Length: 408
Image (cartoon, rainbow, N blue to C red):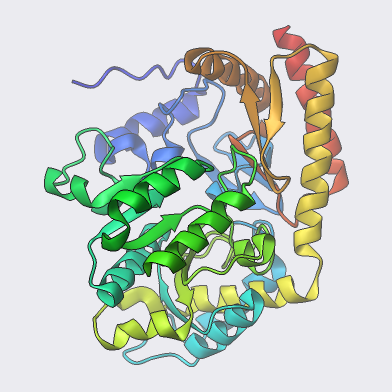
């Protein structure tokens, strides 16, 4: 039995639409992280109807500065003109064909040139898809079944083994070996026990709620080399945000395969897995296929995004404004003796609250409640886009100070 959802904090417009949606759509949304009842913040609107630049509007036409960035895919800003123009131009020629579009190689060359390390690439539609594709290729190439995993890699069976009531056969549990980010001892222990059977180690190279650990990434690379295990970077969130070349450029450590999605097409549905020919050519001995991977509008969008990334100081902008936001937050927390501090990297800084998990959640809800009321669309990861400007950060810091004062 599900518990009734408290919608008393919603406006009448949102409440009516939410109740209507629940009748036909489980969760009233397609994405777990967009659920209203996922750590309910009463003033957070369950629906957004419009977005432009770094601003979004809800059903009541209330405007917010957006730091959720559609969960990360929007890197340049909503409706970024150059991307929208490329999509509109391609729309005149068609969306999906019965054979390959020339845009497939044009986008591939642009993406691979931007990454700077991979030889070949294939497209899919979601982050979960490409993580699963990388694991499949690793198993096909090595002939092994087991894998080491660190971080979230989507909803597919292999990555959902620890979820409640997951509908996944328990027999699969014996093949998956989970470790925490940054745990060097766990790397040794997992390879000591299972190294000869490990097809892959798939890892999020940065967890936004932790400080980045280069020793963790370097040790994984060394162990994978020692045991003939395929190293996979899940760069769904870090790709094109840490650096143009992603974690490979940021850490100076090269994976064998990598999965990309959020950030590569500025919100259009596209993901990709890429790597050295030695590993990507495994597709000559197995099959991974899907109809919509060559959809042209998203490819046109991605090609335009790569053009912007290679021409303009996007990454520098994300780090600079993100650092300004982070420094401002920490200054306010200290000034007002608020029990929190920032962690992670500037392009998507997170706020770590003090206390137990329950206390942390309660503090986050209190603070975010005030921020949403003041037109700041807060998020656990505060994603900076290329459309955020100094004035947006200044306004956000002003609203953060007001919010803290209202709580203290």
